[in-house]
Structure formats: structure tokens, C-alpha cells
Length: 119
Image 1 (cartoon, one colour):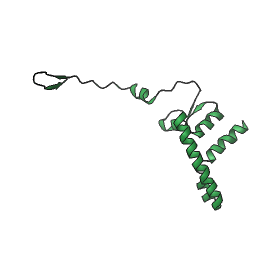
Image 2: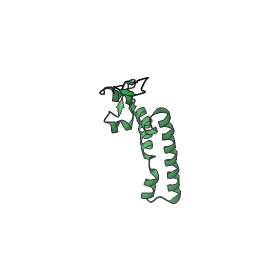
Image 3: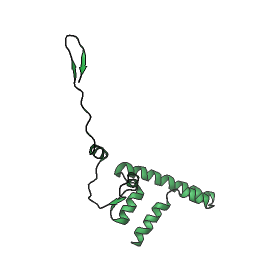
Image 4: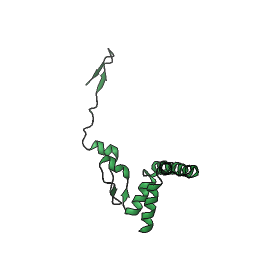
């Protein structure tokens, strides 16, 4: 459990570490290294998000909590973590739950006058 906690803290601390290094009075070399870590984490989050829908931090939290966790769920007023195997609704399913489908217009064209009528 201690290793999982350390992993989780490292994931959170790698975010914006260049700012922390600059504010903390770090040397130019320290700030450069921190900027490199920031860029690497941003790239890793982009790849992870595109392939799994979760950031590196989400994966770390899921590993520690032994649940399926996504920080962005908090923005949608959903629980951050759910048990593995819990079915998830897609955005289109969530929208379709309380909405009636739009009426389909019926369009006819009179072959003699080529007038279009819509009902």
C-alpha cells in the first residue's frame, strides 16, 4: 500500500512542477528539467486519454483505489470512482433517456406541379 501511495503522490506532483520549481526558487537547470517532465506528462496524458479515455493520474488513482476512477466525472456531478464492471452510459444514451426524438417531416412533391409540401 505504501508503494501505491508514493506512486499516487508522484503522479500529482509531476503536474505543473515547472511552476513549483520557479516559485520555489529553483535554479535554471531545475526549472528546465521540470519543464521537460511537464511536457512528457502532457504528452503521456494525451496518448493515454486518446487510447483509454483516462489520464495517467486517473490510472494511478484507479490502481490505488482498486476501482475505475476518472477525475473528469467530478465535473459531471458523477462519482469519481466506481467498481470495476459497472456499466457506463455513453453521452448519447444519457441524452436520450429524457428526450423524445424529433418529429420526422414528411415531404411530398406533386409530380405535375413540382410543388413541395411538408407535413
